Length: 404
Image (tube, rainbow, N blue to C red; front, side, top):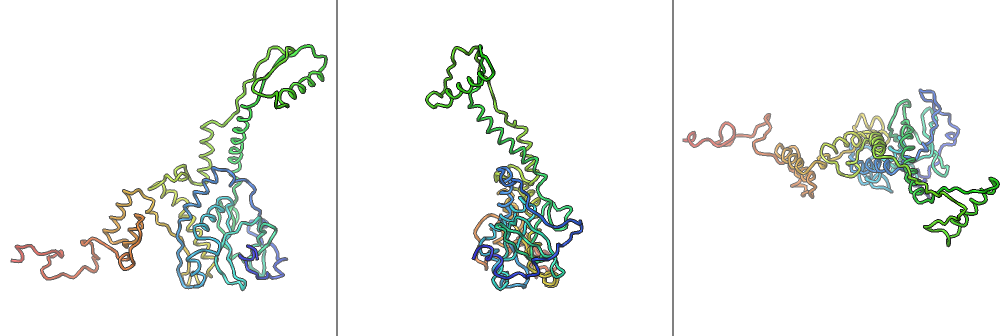
């Protein structure tokens, strides 16, 4: 049994599904797509940007709500599938979305069709077909393996979604930047090669024909450079040559301003900066990145997974859903963390363990850690504490003069 069977199970697909008609979109385009062949993930700068996406997305925490599919929920609280932990699944999901602008999540199934989890797949191409008056999506996977699933049971994450109701537009807009990055690499490589090459020009007289001149050039180059014993750091010229000069060469490389322009284009495209890539961002800067990407990704991922796992009745009628959360306060400076803990603790807005989590401290036992501390002068104004004998108007002890 291979990975294909491990994911999709051994269920036979309906025979009529192989000849199903193409499902037409509103735009009138035949919905058959192939993956973009641009080398987005081969650029170190773009890979570093997507790595930042993945690392921070991998910190999200899955949360389950509702009672539908109890066995599946029980397994997915621990890990999304039999092959990955949640941090790995989330990292891959964010990376695929950045590289392809379309990501597909399918259910992993037992041989009897029972859902056992979810996993991302990377098809070579895909197409929408209509079977039994319902849209299905057929994936063409590596090694030309094919699998069709009901569209309602497939999670589709998108970026740059514009003209199509279901899928993103792709990363074609990034091609000019990729071309500049490629030319920059080639320019540096060629500059190093040219700097190590011999380049001279000289005058030679008394040649009868152009053929003689060519033969002499070939002979001299073979003798000088073709034999390791004669090639070296010194060039010898016969006295038939005169007026010998060295040709100074320097390889062209992109200057600092042009390099910054390329980096700025990549950073703008993926919503990152150097501090995010180099793990220097915290406080407001990290929160801006969180709200710009991580929170958006968490919302879309939670909605997509909830939609593929639960029916409309289970979601609307009974509130079943999966959502992802993150403790944003952990990325504040130590000074800001202390202020947050003080304010939340004083006002009774967090448990002891929630406050300790902000400071990266180990949790206390539940009977203590789940307590909600608060300063004594704060109380519920709709349900004030009962006065004790001898208390004043505000709950304090009467003055000594009043008690006399």
